[in-house]
Image 1 (tube, rainbow, N blue to C red):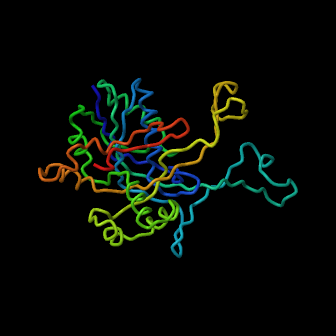
Image 2: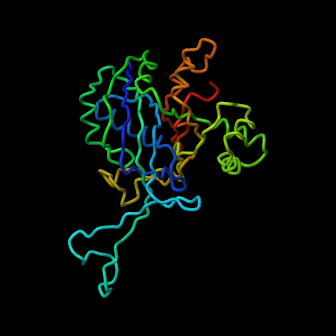
Image 3: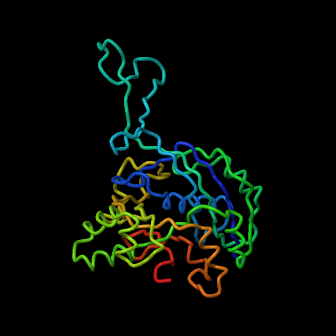
Length: 297
């Protein structure tokens, strides 16, 4: 029997907010799914999906004239000034700089594990030495576990926040109705304000949509004939391939509203709360993608 684990109010410091090469600030769904996979391996089981509940994100940087500038970190010397970059004849050493974009996060996770024997104490110890999206986990509330038929109870442990819904349906509909290409539809849709969104789609529930990374597509067949692969246990047998990110449209939806509607007999949209689960799969050999069952619910 599967079991749900609730990790409430996790706070992460200095997490990476660049979810892919062209996108800053998207909800870290990809990182959350890989984080759950990491936990499952540590626990000796398998993960069957996650629900990400957004609470807060604090972007680290400056804001001026409507433009956000990420804060940067200066490098440090390892031994002495001889290992600084720059010419030795320079009047002062030159510190290197690697462009970064970071943020502080607060969120809750509901993870579905395939095993019913999950120890909150063991999971707590794993979390204390883990990182999320490159950031340090500094705090979380008491971890609880729930049976497979107790997802509503699990979500009520969190109470507030915003669940993340897959809304690629909005992108497809907008593109078809506007008769434009997918990139144009993507940028125009994200630029719409809440009132314009509700009017265009005739849906009063639309208010907060965003973009985030939902997977990647290989640009070449995997090969083991490439040297210098990071973290490879065996350079000669580790396959490698260049890939590009797959960016999708998501919606932030009030968890409290979902739970309220779930108790209303006349509204069956949320009677199956498992629609909120995000899982990863390979729809074809060269595409790795996160998906959710909310669409067409």
